[in-house]
Length: 178
Image (cartoon, rainbow, N blue to C red; front, side, top):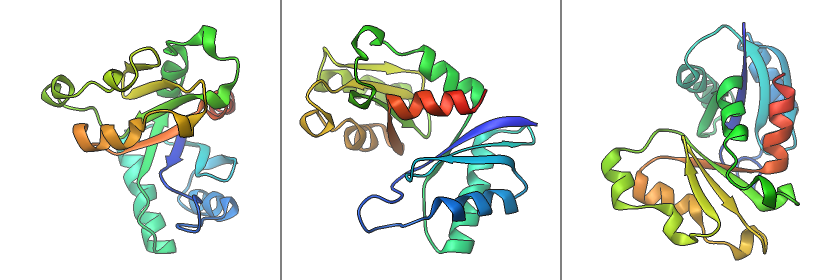
């Protein structure tokens, strides 16, 4: 059995795609996952299941959400080790005085070399953006609303879905996987 982290994209933002976390826990439990815990109301869950490829686990969950709840929800699953690598890879540790201002934009797939060569998100804000392994880190000193829109730019130029979480959420999820 292995710990996994589920990050749903676009859940409970505004009035669209409303999903109660109790329903998400029930769905994951019905799929056979154990020790299911959710964090906040934005589609974050930690659970234990048979070791396997995260993309296959994500596809199973995404299909179940569609079948059971009638919603198309991009679903990203990380292993505990992948999440720990994102946390360890933080390029701005000295700046994290407020975890709500550091964003991790997590990529659903690795962009091609050609796409990465054609567009570098660091150019949006060279002092505050860094690219890691399937993640773009963004320090938003003035808050997220005053920072460049990294997610939409990455989706457009790299052709992969992105879901973002602030550093407080990332740290809590990492603790929950231990």
